[in-house]
Image (tube, rainbow, N blue to C red; front, side, top):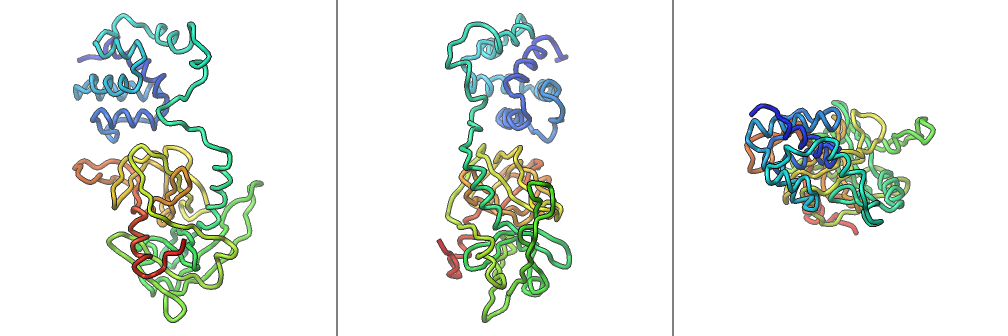
Length: 330
């Protein structure tokens, strides 16, 4: 049907409740729409105008309403929307309901979404500590990212270091980042040792990981990440420390939502660039849950339509290899 006042009122309401792109995208997914077909950029009003146009075209407005009403059952206007009765509610009424009127103290301060974004301040301190072990991997054909494990081991992607021959010519660059003053931090370069008797090299094209020995004692200066079996799930948050575009170390802090996870793959909206391959994907406890390896128009297992996402290999696949070769150190 043509755009009407009911859709306008619903747009204004949802633009208030789901004001950022991440949360709006989650509603679109849950309602059975494809975010890839909707322009999600711009301000919240424009985003929800585009979403509801697509929902109306595909007869999914009721599904949008049901998803949001399930999350906000106390919202009178969504209750009215669920009964297809938003005609009489004006934009001014919606704004007034959100910001005015009587409220007790418990309602004046609250969590703004279904998952708290409040984190203890030591979250930042632990993140900085973990970041020390994330490195840039440099080889003749380009660069990627990787991270150090105990025993002076490097983990990265197979497509970054596919063979011992490539590993012999590669190096890792540690502490390649900016200081708090925006200056270049001092870096240190280490060679890789893929050959016995002092080195090792294991790789998997199927699961896109490589494990190789690092020369000298990189762990002494830059620490190591410890791995344990830990899965994640849809709608969890993940953080990726990386060398995007081959540049200085960065962390992605926005859009960090898991969109799919199983025993093999983790897909997420977290930003990456070429050069980020081989980065550790952390959960909110700063434990590694995946090894980042690709991005773009990816297919969720069991779904024919491709979606624009990033993807990592579930960390259990790397742990399986470490255990197989007797390399897992706690």
